[in-house]
Length: 447
Image (tube, rainbow, N blue to C red; front, side, top):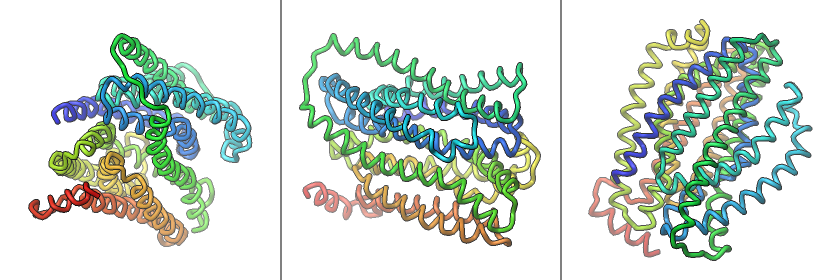
């Protein structure tokens, strides 16, 4: 298991530097766009991420899981079929996107060029996903970490240079902010494709065996389809959430401008700070999917139990420290963006959301590796439904407003983390009495 922990450590260190850059990026955006512009930027991000999700088709997850479970001599053939699948998906999505995107209402409030820039992401993300999945499956986390860091570094450099030497109006400033985000993805695409090509050339000089095309496609689709469905539901709800929150606030008596500004402070300031430590959770997610898949394929339940306990303890330690700092130093942290007592209050009230979110990501990695994607999907549906109901109900009350929105968000994180944890521990037989757990494990595996 040492290779997995080295991968986690390397990813976490690099991600820490990347999150530091992301923090600076959000500070620049807050100061250059203002509270209203930042709210506009944060409102369109879920839609962009939705398109990114569709373009990736969760190939990094399915390819990494399949590569981790198979011998190295099959990898070349797996990649061949994965690339063909990615090209087909890219062609279909580009055709649909060209027809549909110009009529999507959310783009009507932004510069006309933005919708065409977003379409550029489809081939970029789709082909990059194959490389990401292979490097994840082979535990070559250095390339993944370098790509993640490079994306944020390029975005920061572009934002700093453009806003430092040029003056833009509010509409063009928003266009520049989104363009730098998309441009950084293009740079990552060039880097990963270059590294992937080197790896493919090395594989061509080694012995290889073929797998049946239908078998490869079946295995990839068996993971990609339900995982994409799960991510798609989350992306759709994230895309709806800005309008739900702003709608609830307007219904409570706030003006549209104030509602947008409060949403900008919530997502652009409080969330940016609270998600900063999540680089550790994201690092765990990337490493755990292939690791858990491999251990589960080998029926190594003792290692799975040990890994889960260690991951939960690590998350509890860093998560508790993080939310404690957020709570007591909220005014100082939020003042790095702009002075606002409101955003500091948001950060303090959201501590349960952040703490349980740190647990959710590694637990989702366990569920994917254990083949429990359907169960994870149902958990997300239930928690989101309850959360959205509370957000609109409480947020629309004049005496609650944003406090009610935050109660709904906290409820979702707590409920989802508990559902994931109870399901995973039941699956791998983790209990206080290991003597009673092992017969259950054996019976599950025989079935």
